[in-house]
Image 1 (tube, rainbow, N blue to C red):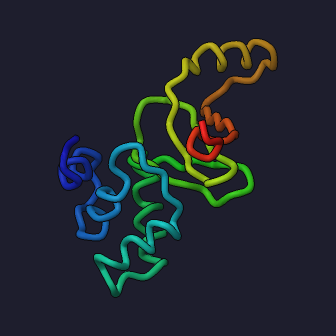
Image 2 (tube, helix red, strand yellow):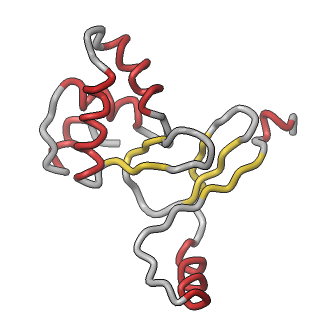
Length: 135
């Protein structure tokens, strides 16, 4: 994966140490809430404020660099933008993972049945992960 600085520059986002830190925390298939990001960022930037984390997250959302993952009954999580995919959420430990599914057929069928023109997709499947179920 490219460096945090390169990724930010490719999306025309001003490179700051805090933004590079956020990108480093979200690399891979990591999903973190603003509070979780803030806790991780405090170890690197002791004087960082929660407002600064929110401001940077919002700036990256506006550039479609980050995506917000809305999960029922918990705070939104954030991830680096990538190809369309769904999410799995463990109701026991709270872990959120990516799962590659063909969402095209779901979107097409939903649009045909409802008459909606679908512009954005978000699919979260909840259950118990293998670690929590002991399998």
